[in-house]
Length: 471
Image (cartoon, rainbow, N blue to C red):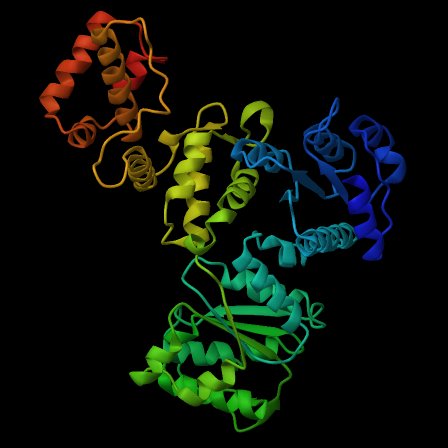
């Protein structure tokens, strides 16, 4: 495998330094100071995770790509938690590995550039801040690469929270305009008259309150990029003025009779299909054609659920407030399964909010199912229930269940009932009324069972303190 990847590196124009020993690679890592490390996960002696951790300590700016034949979620999560840039599942496609290598090396170059740039103002514009390696996101990355360095206007579509502004920033940063301003405005945030003044500027005395000349955002973005978010909310009269600016490449400030030439690339975003608004007369068709020279659609999170573990680890590193030993919070497998089962109507923004909440609420840096929002846990319960019952007759599949032969029927039933109540209470955040409804029993019955459990086992229920579980 080391030889195969080395040959690919040579063919792509890179200079590889192959090792078949993780111990030897760690030993000579500093001497080579590589721009990128690719390591298998399962190796005798020093594993790929050990190589990754050594790289994070000795070469913190060097990205690491993990290669693994294991599809276990825990192994992938462990590697991403330790700081891996990406992971590849064997057998992998050559172009996927090469694309991942290219992005990793671009990130390394960007980090070095930012390190030498005292202001650091462009660090947040890196292309690699768009997290994802699903097929849909690879299509997005490929299109960004193709169109970034053109002057064509681009219409970015996608639901709210999918990261349209991140894509706009990536388009700007990967273009020759990267050293010029990137200016963004949400068209739904201001009323029509104020938005016109913000975009085009105004002359002193143009209206009440215009006490001095104002430079508009088009002029502020001169030579760079202007991003018009939620363009679908723009008023019809303002659409007409915007169309004229895009066609003539000149503008007039409000209250002025002088035209100003502009050289600005315009990117626009919409969270609803503009074709529908055109049919109802809510959006100008000619402006749509002017904006949508190139269309770029960002998939919703439910359309790229494979990216959820990557996003989760990214947000854990971003929002952890200490965690264990002052490090990043860790997420337990049931909680990760719940996150992957949820549909995320608010997309990446909703996921980030959920992870920030979990980082604040978790104990000892360990995120459990109970630290997630209730609606996410409910989605997890529905997914588990649908998997637990066979399709058609609704019976449970016991073939994969280990049965405690040798114990009495009464003790087994009692143990199952106690554990089921415990997990249901945990799932519902300790709210007994909701747990009782889910269990299909009355609240009084649930209270009685809890009291009986307290009497029979005053110290613990399962593996958890009774006071903590049922308080």
